[in-house]
Length: 208
Image (cartoon, rainbow, N blue to C red; front, side):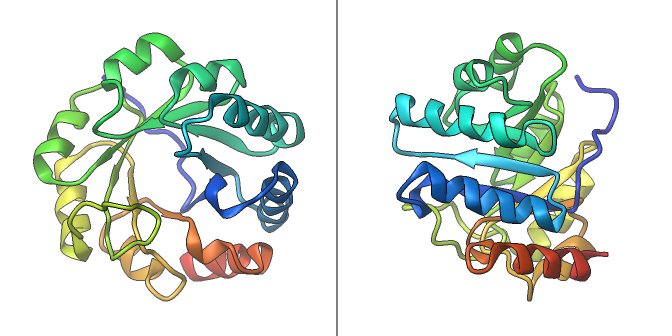
């Protein structure tokens, strides 16, 4: 079980490969986020094509590895292969302790939860942070879990000692209310896609 709280920034940016047609597009997106001061980014790719995922991941590591903490979604093996800084897994992936054995003690490990029972279970593991969601309706998943709302964030904050990331449909208009409900960080996909540098800068202004 993790005993110290990691320095989680208030904005947790996510680059979803499905939003880009080429590696260059992802790199330009992340470059804009880095220019706004983003220090944490999750690379998400649900296509299942490991070769493409590794190509993207290695390109991100080469260009941003010293500037941004990079988290691999789902795949602990690709986290190691690309020398990422951590991995984020869901309820249908490997267990947190299985992932920890793969990535070792120093890389960050995050776990998604969708209800109090899951959150209590993750709180007893070596995960470095726990995510709760979807907070609001989201279009980033084909079959999303039930919306937890701001009340779900408040309950989650009381049920875990770990840093709490809120995810799911969070925009600049709602981010402050999510932080005020108890989240340490907001994970954002869609609301960073249009004019990412200015969007991220506005998030930072709102969240200060």
